[in-house]
Image (tube, rainbow, N blue to C red; front, side):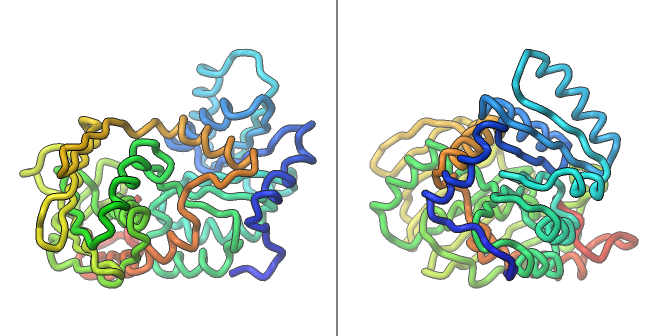
Length: 347
C-alpha cells in the first residue's frame, strides 16, 4: 500500500473532511464518460445542493457525447458547476483538491490508470467500478499504490434494500451454502465478481479455489465492440466450505440465483428479473435493483454525511478477486483469440 498520508476510516473524520468545503461545495471527479459514467453523473448531480463535477476522459468523442447528454437533460438552473477534460495533465495541474473520485472506465488497463490516478490526485475518497482489473500486473499495481482507507468498489447489491433484507433471513441459516447462478447471457468474465462479492456479503467467505474446467476452450466476442467473453460453468470454492457455481448457456432462461445447503436442500431462489426472492419456509421478499444513478446519489450522500457508504472496501474486493483474475488470465493465454492483447479483453 502507498506510504503517503492516509485518510482515517473514523466516521467523525469523514464528516470533518467536508466541513471546510461546505461553502464552496463538494468536488467530485468522474473518470470515464461512457454510459456508466453518465449514470454516475446523474446521481452526483442530484445528490447535493452544491457540487462541482469534473468529467474526465482522454477520448474526446466521449467528452463530446457526455457534454451533449448533460446539456439535453440538465438545463434547469443549478448551483452545480460542471467541467469537461480530455487532457489528463491539464486536469491535474488545475484541480488540486478533490472530495470524491469515481472511476468508471473499462476494466482493461485499469491497473495502470488507477496507479496513475492514485499517485497524481489528492482525493479524499474513491469509488471504483468493477471488475477491478483483468490481469495480475494491474492487480498488483492497484494493491501497491492505493490508499489504505476511503476506497470502495461499486458492488451495488450490498446497498440495495432488497438484498439487505434477503441477507437478514440468510443469517438465521448460519450454514454452508451452494449458490448456483444461471443465465443464458450472464457474461462470466465480466460479471463473476458480482456474485463472489454477493456471497462474501452473505457469509464473509473468500475464494480459495477457482475451477475453470467447465468453461469452453474459446473466447467469443461480447456485445461490447472489441471485447470478449467466455461461456460454460465456473466453480469457486470458498473459505468456510460454501461453493459458488456460475453457468451460462442458451438452455437457460433469465438469470436465477438458487441457494441450497450441503445436502442439496432448498434454501432460497432469487429472481432478479421478476424481483422476487422465495425461501424454503414460504417467505417471499419482493424488491428490485435500483438504477445506478439512484445508487450513486445514495453513495455520495452517505460519504458527505460522514457515514459508511456500504459498498465493498478495496481490501475485501482485492481478496475476493485475486484467484479469479489469475485464473481467467491463464485461460485467456491458453484459449484467447490470436492477434489480440496478451491481457484479457473483458470489461
